[in-house]
Image (cartoon, rainbow, N blue to C red; front, top):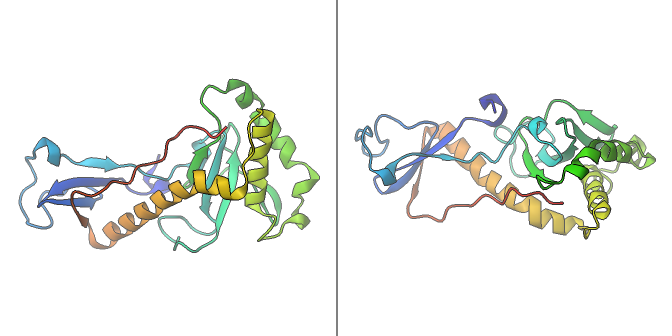
Length: 223
């Protein structure tokens, strides 16, 4: 994953009984100016997991990104979000006022939710056909699009439920899918964005320790 796609790597290290976050480990502590050359094991720097991914490298996944701009640069927490579904080649199918789009670029900084378990080879083999057939139905013509009621989220959730139904699984309503799969990842992303921008502005970010660390949601598939 390139830095231009998902941002610079974030590092966390301990010093002065604080957690210090930065894009790299500095030569000296930014708080006390002490040399950081030799550290105890518990003070060793660790990398912070990036919640964003290049969506075009994700197979059979639900993707989420800002409608305009990127999460790390322009997103303000209130901007509109756009969603889509990837095929097995990372092409992002998404519904808009122009109908179903098949994007080979533009989703390089996305939140990704895998929709298949790794061992679901049968469904993966049929995925592209299911997605294409679903997308070419008259339900997704441009004139049917309504920003608030019949939109990209309608399209993706209905496809997910079609897959669940084909597998004999219980379908999900919008609030259930959002709370269970989307909200935990967007909360994590929001914390990461705040941290990233603070480091970008000041060069580092400091918190007290010990502090409850946010845990990333499990990466298992939905279906």
